Length: 399
Image (cartoon, rainbow, N blue to C red; front, side, top):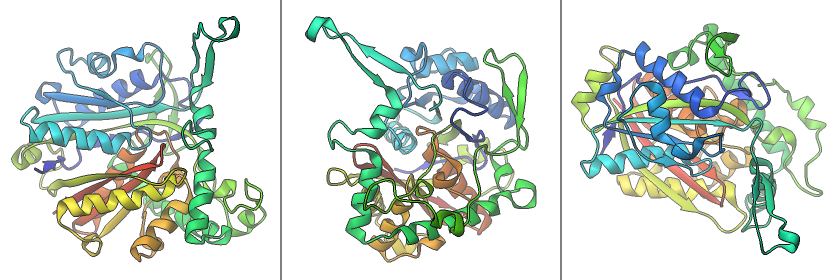
């Protein structure tokens, strides 16, 4: 069973480094605000949808109702569906979920949305009467889980160090990759951001927290700081005797994305806002879980599963896109499959434009579709890791 994405029926906000220009916005209200406008701009009526799903990893005030609240805020008061959280694999899971619903005949036109705010993350208190004096347990939702996996008992950067050791990856190689990824991102900014304008507003109006007025305008991502090999050479690894520096990892961010998916190729053509655009077919998805504390290597397994399900091999893939919170991710993946990491992640990646968790993979998938269109079609493979030493992959064909 394949599914389709109407070409151009997707969008992304700029991603803003945490505590930046999007940090005051409730992520679910913000996603509903953006999706409503994006669909109107693409002349897609809310009435066409019979399924919706929203991906979120960071709790927000009154987020209990999930997807039905998001769609109601958009004006689609009868549209419902699941709320999904699979940490950084959330977007890939949204795609897999919609494909599954379509395969069962439960959905024909699906609205996939994901939005997260890593800024001002929730501090949660869990009552525990059995503790001394009844004192409860608490956590800083994002920071505590980044710094201490409850099963692997280590920070995420430690998983990157483990993978670096397994594959013999040096600091210098990581810095070389970071420099190349910054150069690739510049291609997305060339010609007055021509590439990004395919799916992102040229001037993005940032609303106030009540969504009544514009308080700022963003022209692209915020908080992407250029670097050089010379600057990176002066950085020390975060762990004694390690290889991963601050330059070799991404930054937390805020933002949201959306994609329309349909079960029928003809319907995809009808709903595409671009006349005569290509056919975008979702071929397969895959997932995998690595050895404990080896998170950045998990996409190696996920990609193989997606390819096996599609009956394809890696040499049939034309465009590679990854969610790469660490430079180690891409180097390990390339070595596992005999690829040149320099050919991956043209036009940008999460290592550079940031990591708002839920929507991170969705933006990468959108960029992959556009890169495939530019090159005249082909097969694209998105893959990325997620907390819990897991990963997911999505195969897409554009013709």
